[in-house]
Image 1 (cartoon, helix red, strand yellow):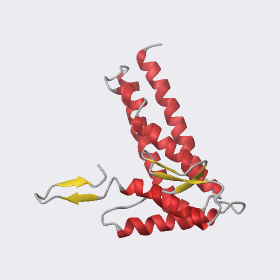
Image 2 (cartoon, one colour):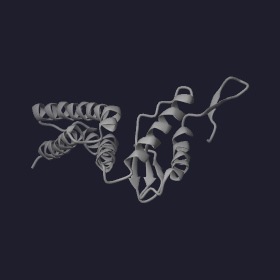
Image 3 (tube, rainbow, N blue to C red):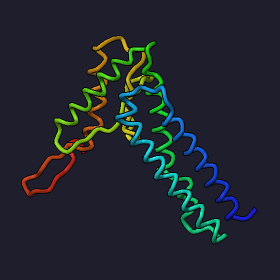
Image 4 (tube, rainbow, N blue to C red):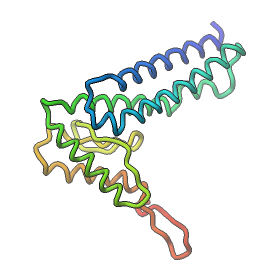
Length: 184
């Protein structure tokens, strides 16, 4: 086993995982609104990342050597974050069926979109998902909504979590013209 062979094997495994995630995202029968709003973009980002890794694989296979930064690309933060977002997306898409209060997640997502729209230069291109507790995931920008949802009064708690997302964008302009994050 050469270092190049080990790297190619690792790349093949990651490419297979990304392909599997892409097929799951593209599967029929998911929440239509979520698929239109998030699924297509997520599928494109998966495709782009997969193509990047396939390009790296072709270079390693043709050269037979391992470039200096190749292992860090295989174990990349980007791959892990993308796969984590796919898992959360699939949980959200499949949990918004007729047997749960999916309409509350839809209402919550619509509220987040409206709030982001009102804040200048902020676009929320994410979603909410049911979870054990309310929280905001900084890496994927997914907002977890406590399950089971007891009613519409759980939405203000989710909006609090949305505030954590906004805190990374709200800027204060100082008298000298420089900007800083308000919650820094």
